[in-house]
Length: 370
Image 1: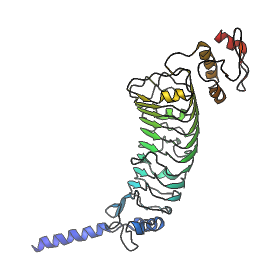
Image 2: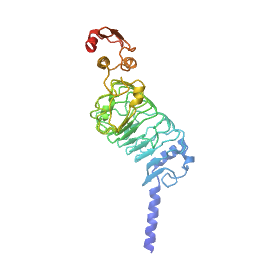
Image 3: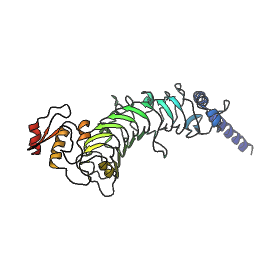
Image 4: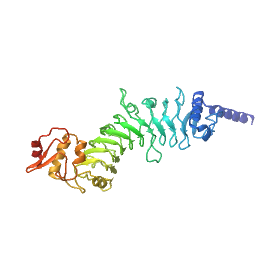
């Protein structure tokens, strides 16, 4: 009996020792609690140990903080920078749906795999923020929320750019920066294995050719409500793509035949763009907004079928010039004589009179449309 009692005392003592947080983690956790108001809302008292079970949302192992989950806990203020060694074994971090503001801090988190920042009002994120997160798998993926809405301003330059060592996040699976105020053209993510990418409801612009970098892995792609322009890429290599949301941008040109031919595609949103050419035909089980897109001015016809030969010929010329916006905004529907910019009807065809600061030979046009 004495031996058993002594053994139980040792176990209890070991448990108490294991609960004592490392000095680096403890110092940062108290700083974080004070800066965000967690000392009051989550019971993170100044004299309490973060790993003793009294701090809500904190998970520890052997005195090290391995998880912080404080979603929708009414936190405010800003997140402080962490000194080297702080939270070095943290695996998941969830600050979602609070009211945290300011620049997101510099943290060295070599074991972090899950990061949620959505539903806050962060103003910026340092380009070097992710440099110490080689194991990151999920970034900002919302918890049953329509957007991440972290409030971040800036661009993605330098975050996902390839380096001499290859893609900086080889384990990254899901990325969501939706509902922010980010600008510029996203960089090529070639070399990653991203399956879910959501950049919707931002101010991104430029061509969407960057998506070809994730063609071999992407399953859900959401780029809606931005300022993306230019043509759609060839989708032949997007074998796993199931959901494509590109609505409400400035995308021009003709929908490539490779998109409707994808075997796993189940939902496509294209409305609110400046697409031209014939209405694409998807499988009967694919959910689309093509009717809305056509009613809004995209495509030459409201129903399926080829465009008028003169329209098709002129679109082939516009395609050679990259489908400029000025042309896409004017060359609508299926009658090239119905107010198309730069078009003058002649007895033997249609002449183009330099509608987009490019020299086009009327003879060349006539050869297409006679």
